[in-house]
Each structure stands twice: as C-alpha cells, then as structure tokens.
Image (cartoon, rainbow, N blue to C red; front, top):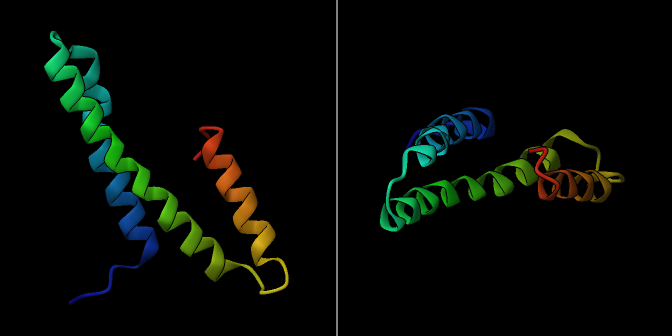
Length: 79
C-alpha cells in the first residue's frame, strides 16, 4: 500500500468534504439534509490527521502543548 502522508490525505479529505458542505444548502427535505450532514461528519477525521501532523512537526518537549493548541483551534472551528 502506498503511503500518502498527512498533507495529501488532509487535502483530499477537505476537498472531498467540501462537496457535501456546498450541497447542504440545496437540501429540500429532512432526509437529504440528514444525508448531507452525515457526509459532512466524515470531515471530523481531519482531527486525527492534524494531531499526527502536529506531533511530527514539533519537538518532544512542546509536542503536548502544540497538540492541545491545534485541537483547541479545531474545536473553535478554525481547522
């Protein structure tokens, strides 16, 4: 299996996730809205990629702080 890395995986996830985000405004029934929201929930996997990527970028002595800041930023909607 080919290793894609966090950057390519993250980019692909966000690009694919952008499709249901754009389409949710076109929902005309509760069922279609629910299906779009279900598809949007897949973007939550970006949290795992961000934590892995942050762990690789920072030195061990500040890795915990960097992961906490990145996780908090994501919870605020900045991710």
